[in-house]
Length: 307
Ligand code: NAD
Image (cartoon, rainbow, N blue to C red):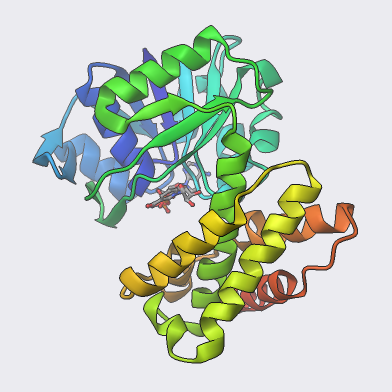
């Protein structure tokens, strides 16, 4: 397949590198010129549990330089950059191009559907981790999975092809008719731990330093689960709460991506996480005071960053 990765940071480079290693024709599209230069000069240096190696059989360029329609385009920008990126990457979009988002948060399918017929939009969640500290170098340690589906819920040949490509690249990918449940459950987890860490600068474990910290995180999970249920999505609140408790106990030193963004002076994905839940709650006239307060607080932090 000809696969374009739009937003080739930590996750996009990992996925692009593994798909290129599996034999697909991959182009990485990004606006980080230092990263593009490093990849074009020296290849992409990938460090995973399989070892460290250089992936050289992929192209890297800015989105506006893309000229060839991809069979599959995977969006891996942060959520607030999706539309600008897709606008710039129109050269990679043809009448048959399937679009996939595995980004965090809500609203990804709707953003992609502005650029392709809804039948060609696919959506999902991934638990693969990745980070990038230097241009041209990406690390991912530990295992993960991908669960995905067509955004309209109808399986298509394009969905089957994308799943096969990702699975054969070692990314443990499967179709999931309940993908919206998985998406909302991840949003509930992130709405609690990402936003609390972003405003307090606490690591995940430091949220337990006062007795009310865990209770606050679990109350946010309950709020998000209530909104999901009001929209007909059967989120398993007890399952998410158990994941939150597990993270508080065992991933104590972890700094969630939203805190990493704050510390690096970057904007966060708060609008697609707490912000989108607040909007979904408003449509059902549900009060979610804690999630809404965290949304406001993180936006204040974001606004300070961009002054
Ligand atoms: P990242 O910041 O490392 O990568 C985003 C990339 O998008 C950057 O390289 C940036 O230069 C690029 N970009 C920004 N604007 C662009 C534009 N207009 N056109 C093209 N490229 C543009 O972020 P990430 O950690 O790879 O996360 C990507 C998405 O995946 C996010 O939604 C995140 O929540 C989600 N996610 C991340 C992880 C993880 O472990 N990193 C895990 C699961 C899901």
